Length: 306
Image 1 (cartoon, rainbow, N blue to C red):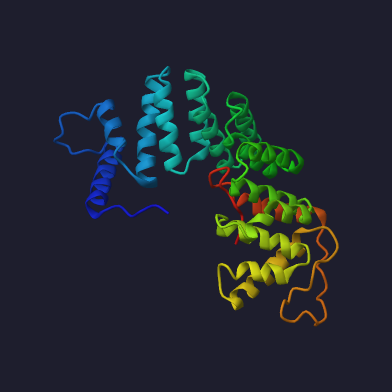
Image 2 (cartoon, one colour):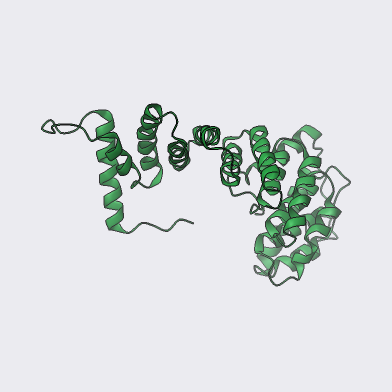
């Protein structure tokens, strides 16, 4: 979570942003003899923070890029400003222009993949991550990002292959393991999802979200009592039971296999509610919705747990 800026820096950012926006609009003071040079405005743009500052910087950097068509570093600065302004598609294109001018690098290709994911261009993201994997085959972030892009593009088999390639490089990466488990779960392979994350039940270094994804897989395999015990590590008994009930409901919505255990952990003897008849297209839509929640985060560190 970003730290709040100190008041003095907030005042500076607000002043600089207002000044730059005024200059862009051509509404500076009437007594000003001349506008700031492009280089001066570029330096000023670099001091701005937040979305508004990013938008102001984007306008200046666009102008500079038009005047300096061979400047690849300027395109990278434009990509960073556009990302800060929430303009992921423009940021991705600017980074592609930087690659065309300066050549591909792992950092540039990973940035394109991340930006295309956030822009919802899953096929383009997958291609960027694939190129990054070819360029740096020993770097786990490329296949990890490729797995997420393929999942979102509706290719779970290809996604799982990519996740496993990432885990071959970083076996203890809980983010990738959780992504693989979720992909398996969404493919109707809940027992395999449990096996992928089983170590999270007792490993001291397992993160909270990995345990929660394991609890979801346990709920999907008819083991709500075990899911509750696992959740006790992070919350009180009542909250753990309530969350388990929610996880069972999610599992019923996503898992195309036979019904899992009854959703009421403490009332297992009660009649089981009718299982919703969810069509394959609706299950696929639900799966994409859950995966899409992860796309705005850094690949290889994404877990779609509650």
